[in-house]
Length: 277
Image 1: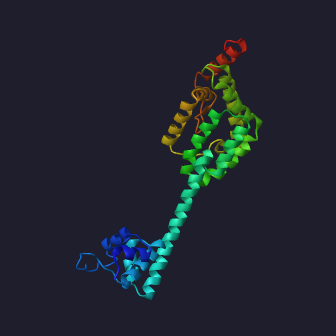
Image 2 (image 1 turned 90 degrees about the vertical axis):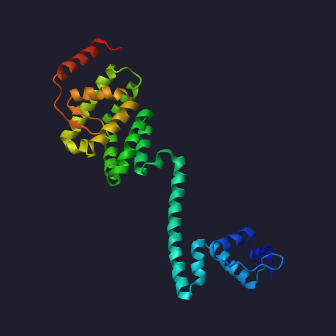
Image 3 (image 1 turned 90 degrees about the horizontal axis):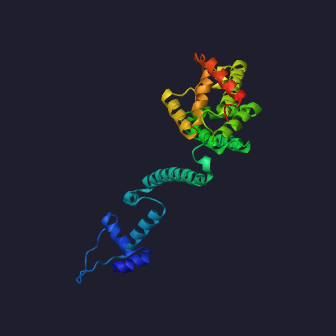
């Protein structure tokens, strides 16, 4: 007969583990001797070794008792079920590891690789990092909402970036970020951008210019995000509306505002006269 300490030592567990097995109903508590100590026989040691082996295999203690009492067929079925669950957990943990690894990868955390490549391309072209951040923050909800459309949108973006005129638009906007709302570069930028958008719409169709098809509340939210990050963008949109295009996240062709012609002429005349300095 063994003391609880001897039993734990021979079975390769701790005394605390033996007491835990008692509490879980996995191991019957033996009678106490005349001194008040529990005494265990070899059967108890064998049972503890079985319990320990099953637990080390990843089987929850809640199911250990079931397996100890199962016949051969029931045991095999239970083990197969547990193995299926463990494989699912391993897959989930692998996903967690991949996500943790991406924490050090900046944009990769919340964006698909194709969008990250696009953002890196903007940086390589010399686009101001503030503009890149607005692009990134805008693509996060778009990619989350419509991941299946991201490859299509990115293919269009790559094609557009091959146009030097669009690249020049990005670079000019970057130069205007630290200037006042009435800076002539914004007027010049609005002229360039309106001409570019109109040409694309006429050549490729208006769906080529904008085909996001997202809900108005999300459009408004993304516009606000851009305007808060890039205040000159709001003024630029006002100029664009005078030139027949409205929106930032979602571009739409509109009739120029009634005062558009006069405003445009005023802005252009001011540039020529050197009023904006």
